[in-house]
Structures are given as C-alpha cells and as structure tokens.
Image (tube, rainbow, N blue to C red):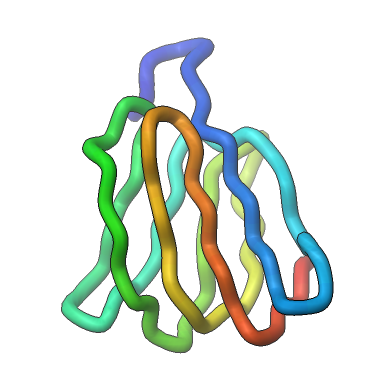
Length: 87
C-alpha cells in the first residue's frame, strides 16, 4: 500500500467536462497490454487504455467506466475518455 498520508491526484476528463477530480491512495486501470497499478511517486508514463472500469482506493473502492489515454507524472494522474459514468 501507499505510504500513509501520500496521495495521487486523479482526474477523469471527457471532451465535455471533467467528471472526476479527487485524491487517491491507489489507481488501477487496464491498458491495452495489461493492468497498471499507480501509486504516489510512480514513474511518469503514457498509455492507451482498454474499455474497462477504473478503480481507485480512497475511503473504500469506487469506479468509473472509461476509454482513452492516460498520463501520469509526479503525483498527478490524468485519464482522458470519450464518456464516463461515476458511481
């Protein structure tokens, strides 16, 4: 698990709006070549995502559907998608 008190800023955006902006302890997404787990201080990366739920840990588990690309740098994670539904 992530160090206590460390988080990563998670943003999910569509062409119409930002649908999710929160801090998370851990983010799990499915890229075209497999699952990616992102924790605070993860190395920067860019990847294409598969159509699958995005999971993140913060006071329990929540998810949103997305398709698109992702960019991670420093302690910020950005996912771009055509459409999203947040539960």
